[in-house]
Amino acid sequence: MKSKRWLLLAGLMLVGTAAHAQVTLPNVNLGFKSTNNPQEIVSAIKILMVLTVLTLAPAILIMMTAFTRIIIVLSFVRQALGTQQMPPNQLLVGLALFLTFFIMQPFFERINQDALQPFLNNQISQDVAIEKAVAPIRVFMFHQTRAADLELFVKLSKSERPKTRADVSTMVLVPAFVLSELKTAFQIGFIIYLPFLVIDMVAASVLMAMGMMMLPPVVISLPFKIMLFVLVDGWALLVGSLVKSFV
Image (cartoon, helix red, strand yellow):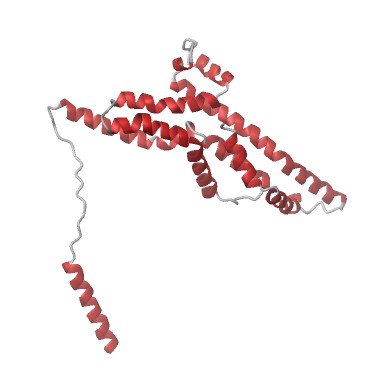
């Protein structure tokens, strides 16, 4: 009976506290209204454009930065080791994102200094801000894009041959950059695969010589591949090589 009384008293205290507490909730109104002010229409269009850019932000991050090469190479390493889902996908994507931010930091700082801050301070217009924001990304993509890939997409676009880099459209540059990144990532993945492939071949040969053909070679080679990768400090070498490949 005493325990029930204490529980009832505690409940009444909580109810009383909640009754006297004041909770402030945000008020959000979404709707459409007619207006005769052109400036309000322009502001609404700008908001829609910003929301569209935010929706496409993941695709922009993947297609126009170092993310593509990094995530493909990390996936090749996991497949070469044969560790199935270790490291997990979330860890690989997270590592690829932070390496991407690390590599792209000078370009992001330039975008913030030349485009974002002047636009927020009403020093430049939106069109000028977008142009200055794209310029550093274009410089990065040009440095990583092969001339053959760029020429391929210039021909596919059926446009005039550009005389300078400034004449190359961003819509032509982006797919050429992605194609070059895919080629580079697969080349790095091939080099990474070679030492682990040798270990698999040695393990398969030893098992065949011992007459143990029913035992999968991967079971024997996996510990040796992990040991080799750890002894040579593989993650540090891999990350360092990836960062240096963008310099």
